[in-house]
Image 1 (cartoon, rainbow, N blue to C red):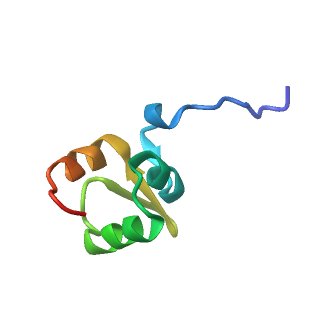
Image 2: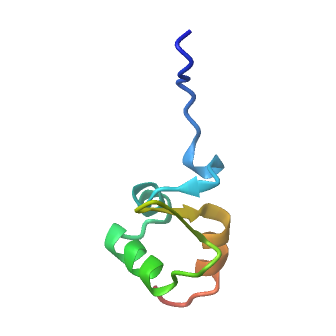
Image 3: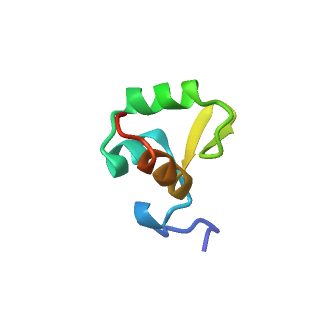
Length: 70
């Protein structure tokens, strides 16, 4: 083997989601997700790796459960 694995993890099992994965999972536009990330830079549901924004799925679920409007 070459050391690379072809394991595919379903989005609903992932701990971290990219903006495009989160947009599909939560049915929220990518621009809106980026806007939420910019408005909440110190929130627990964000992880920034270089210039990549990653969303902690369960913590973001809790965040949006507390909202009435996005």
